[in-house]
Amino acid sequence: MNRGLLIVLSGPSGVGKGTVCAELRKKDKELIYSVSATTRAPRQGEVEGINYFFKTKEQFQSMIASDALLEYAEYVGNYYGTPRDFVERMLASGKDVILEIEVQGALKVKEKFPEGVFIFLLPPSLDVLKERITGRGTENSDVIDHRMNVAVEEMNLIHYYDYAVVNDKIDQACHRIQSIITAEHCRKDRFVAGLNTMAAATEKA
Amino acid sequence: MNRGLLIVLSGPSGVGKGTVCAELRKKDKELIYSVSATTRAPRQGEVEGINYFFKTKEQFQSMIASDALLEYAEYVGNYYGTPRDFVERMLASGKDVILEIEVQGALKVKEKFPEGVFIFLLPPSLDVLKERITGRGTENSDVIDHRMNVAVEEMNLIHYYDYAVVNDKIDQACHRIQSIITAEHCRKDRFVAGLNTMAAATEKA
Image (tube, rainbow over all chains, first blue to last red; front, side, top):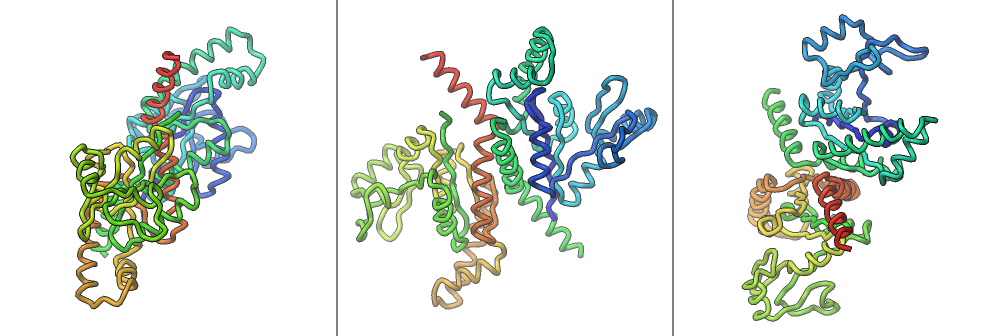
């Protein structure tokens, strides 16, 4: 069996990563969503292992110490991170895993998991991004300007990624990402590695 | 406008390159088929510039001398080759071009056009390839053995290619190749190069 792929979907705040990721999972039921670990308390209806792996602070810190996380960050007093073990188990069983994450987190994942497929989601234009950021709430123009500056800085990190997908229409963006996943499975290096694994397994048997 | 891609579809004799290529062109009317130049006489119904560019021997040799061909070969006393100019004009106008070619020719194209996307079509198994080669005619087993040996040697050239696509079902193979084309257009390097070209054009205007 061929090993699965880790697909890392990132892009600037406001680009629509979450929406695209949710739509992709609807279209492809085989795609596994990477479940994060967190120290924050479960909310009503959240299920262990589905929404999050819920951890105590001590457990989380021990995961950090043993390099059990592909990346982690602290946010409003709680830890959030990507357990390596869950991803590895899924990939080994031949499943593709999608990890939706902000741009800084994606770069940390790339350090520990360079064989992942790194996709950068782009807005059709800066104007559209501003509309989306503005549309989120009733923030004043200073807050919006700040968010736009952050987003433009985040866009410069596109250079660390393998693919760029414009999120003009969600269906189009999903089609492109699905094509990338199919194409990456056809890459000769992965294909030949798969053949070698099969040959080794056959010899052993 | 983004530059088109040169898609080079190759693989061992008998794998079904021609059938897959014809099906791809049916599914994607925008895909341009690379037209070969030849010194052989036009057959009934063949149209200049559609089936072939028909050349005299002198014209063809002058194309060789001026490096106007991405590859060429002699076969049963006639020359066949891939004119670089046709491919370049189509790519510059933003069209993707597909070139269906045997494995040795593909390697020559790679030398002159390394930015092409090189796809190797594989049979589902050697048994299936043998069936296909046998099914072609009434050759004796020596001829079939020889063709199989050639095909197996050709398969080793997969290492020079970017992608491997198994031709198990034609529709599946076409879907994978179409995904590869879509994905290659999303490659970050191509995308950023496209942005830079646009920016330069805007500055100039």
